Length: 417
Image 1: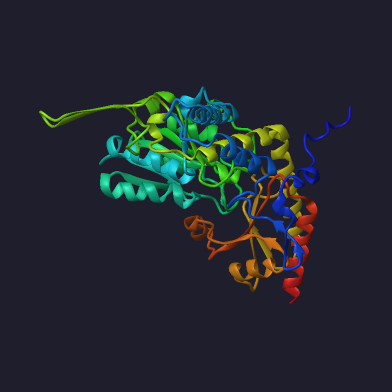
Image 2: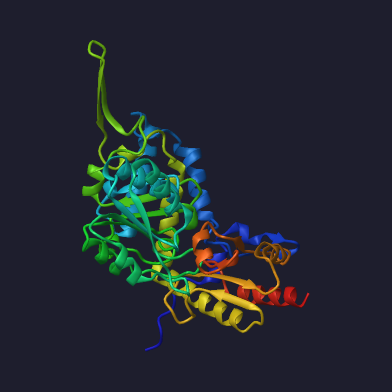
């Protein structure tokens, strides 16, 4: 039997993205900065517009029709996310501003009561700054120690070094699923076992994995997963923290105010005030939430599920292998990360001899090609690899091989001057 046809055609998918009709410097827009943020399909844009035109109201605040409609949409968005990543229910899904806030929520909710002198937090040198800075800042206040697992020369995790660092003093292991620099994919099942054997929890930065591949949090055996909507076709300002329910029930809220409380009773006679927190997940969602962002995230998830996450992953793998081959055949180009036959995400960081990364990115912009340049908010990894920065091309559902061909042609023209 022949190979099954893919669930989506990237050329057809491109028609759903209005921004891809733009021209830059007179040339068609080639958007290869998806690891920073993705573009939005018309279905997501229209879903947000409909919410504001038809159902805009605050959630969980009123009995009138609009509030009830907005609340239903917002709760349904939590349900869609839970199903998308294999969580048990909305009690395990907390909406945040982005993955950074989700990680900070865990750090400060755990750190303010559960971490102190003698405790250890293990992170890796391949982390985004958002999975380093909160732990370092909090360690200065609470007195626990932050330890760093090394990477190999390709930028992949050194599992033996990680295993040697995790001890009975380790309270939580914090690791990215897919590196936003090298595209290296970490074995979360192996990491989870190392942590479990020492009684530690596992927090995963899924910003570069949840948008690109099927995810089942229960199968992975992790305790927390943070990711951002804007990297998966949804609007900016909406992110997610998944947490195991039994852990979330014991954690203190990160922020205080409206919505996250069930009852506040103050006794003026003795000056006491009794606060009872709301049920999950609302006890971690203080204040008026980004309701339209939740609606947009729900529509983005529906769009991705319609494509099929297995096919999304396969499409990006094919593009990455194709791009690595083409870049590898060029003189003066050095790519970083695992080789083309390795399991990796759709991210390629590279440099070209004689060019500063920012200068190269600006030159590519003149060809209508959008890439990232610099440290990509992962300076420790660049330092470990001996780099002063890099250029990053990253792919998504609407990218096609012809765009990679244009990238290579542009690089050849720039190199020849």
